[in-house]
Length: 321
Image (tube, rainbow, N blue to C red; front, side):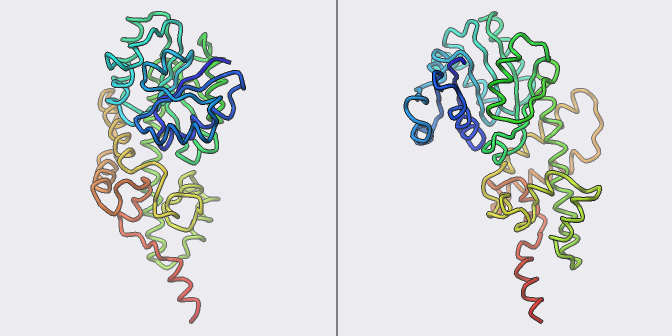
């Protein structure tokens, strides 16, 4: 197996890189870089200095790796990681190397980076491979990865082998930027479902139904979804979900706002009509600006619409009578 690099150790990147460190053959090395030195030291301490090596720049990671993964929040960060003249990935000699960006960004930026790589290093390969499954999926290595490549791409076997260390479902989506297209469609859909689930649960709770009963009804009915079953916006229904921990962790509402907006931009570019796009974007935009919701998991929309987070205490109190 090749020596592997990983740039970007945030909420998603850290557990993804940690899984690589655990599963790479003992002869392979993982070279890492992040703007947080504490995060770098923490991963090296957990995985061991023999397996994980800290680098001082994206350039250094690229120099020492045969396959490189990046996972950063926005398109501007992807540009900086790859194109910064002195310290970016392209400041290194990346001939014949495989570069995989797992960030969720706009397709225009991804294509710009790809074209720059092809112009300067024709033998290098660049792929978009955004992920779905949130921080829980990243920690459990159960992510879905949407790969911007065809199923017969020359690098498909090594890509599947490495991506398979971080996720469970790997889908070649056909070609460049189509992984991102799949991801934006997924997040648009899951964002709408989260709002709908929060609203429906709120109706039920305010009407007097125990949300545990309502969630169980959903689980075997047409309202069933991964959001309801594993990431329910109502605190207390899914103990491992961010909603049950004051919406800490998970997928920040600001990032959902970003992805939702990118999906709407993509729809506008191709002339795809949206009925719920503007309303959904406004919900996530407004929730992102609310101090009670900002920096919390995107399912915090339940809080934003005034959902009763103390439902369990009230039910216990009522049962005493």
